Each structure stands twice: as C-alpha cells, then as structure tokens.
Image 1: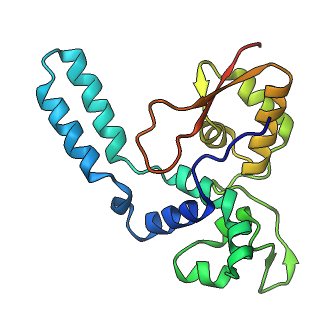
Image 2: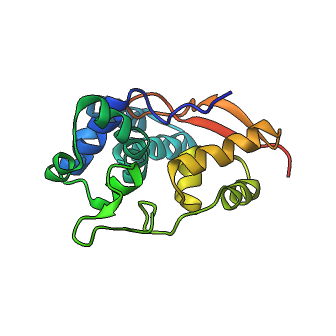
Image 3: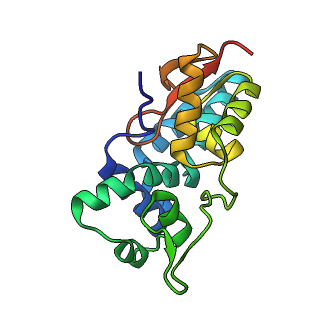
Amino acid sequence: MTIDTLDGSPETAIRNYLLFLEDPTKLVDHELIEKLMAKVKQAGDPIERLMAYAELERAQRTDNNKYKLDFILHAKGWAEANGVGAAAFRQLGVKDDVLRSAGLVSTDSRRGRKQRRETTSGRSSVSVETIKNHVRSVRGRFTLADVYAGVGGSPMTVRKGVQELVDTGTVKRLGPSTEWSGRGRAPIVFEVIAP
C-alpha cells in the first residue's frame, strides 16, 4: 500500500503554489464563502452558528504549508517532464530553500559546494525515526501536512515514516478527509491505533 499525494495532479500542485505566491486570495473559493456566509446567517442555535463560523474561517484561510508541501512533492518530476529549470521558478518568486527541498537545486551556485538540506520551515534534516516518534505521540487523526508542520523533515521522509507505521499496524490509513473544502483531492487522514 502506498500513501497518496496530498492533492491531485502534479500540475495542479505547481499551479496552486505559484498562485499562492502571486496572490493567496486567488485560491479562495468565493462561491463556497458565499454559501458559508448564508449558513452562518441561517444558523439559529449558538453551537450551530459557532460551527458555521469555524467552517467559514477555514474556507477563507489559505494554507501556505499545504501548498508548499504539495509543490515540493511534485515539482521535480513535473519540471523534468516539462523541461522547466529552477531559474524559471525563481522568476515567479519560488525561493531557493523551496527549490532545494523539491530537489531542483542542490548546490550553492556562488560557491559550487553542497549545502545542508533543510526543510521549508528552515529546520535541519529530520530522520525517519524522529518522524515515527512524533507520529506515535499524536492523539487523534492527522494528515501528512500535520506531521510535516509538527516536526519538519522532507516530504519523502514524512511519507516514509508514516508508511512504515502503517505497515507495522501502529497507524491506520482512514482515507481522504471528509472535511476538506479546498481545491484538489482531499488529504489522506491517518490515526494512531497502537502506542
């Protein structure tokens, strides 16, 4: 069994991250916002209204980490298949640390020597064991993006660590999130089932 990517096609992941860099509001689903505003106005019960406000807030927010992670997961393969180099991504505002994490830049062009790989959050490389220890401490359900945001590491290391826990029966893959309201495919939800 393999873990699905967080969102649909590689091209969608690239497009969404570039749109986020250009103007994050372009990724907000305005039609959904209008529906949720109407839901807030129609809610009679305070808890129902509270839940409607929370849903509206989630829909209005654009998640930089999610778009960045999707870009990192898909950029190298997509760029190679389409003949797009790192310089072209830089022209659209993609930073070198993101290009490095995606595998598109591996050396410092000014000095010609390898740089230490870092995650997009600026943290040093994180081992599979560190990922697994973090996941074992999680209570409740989580996604790959939650693990990435919590402990860092490369997207591939996060996927590998979670997959190893799925294979040993420590973590259960529940499937796509039913609460997802963003564009593309819903992220896969996992749950720790054995400490």
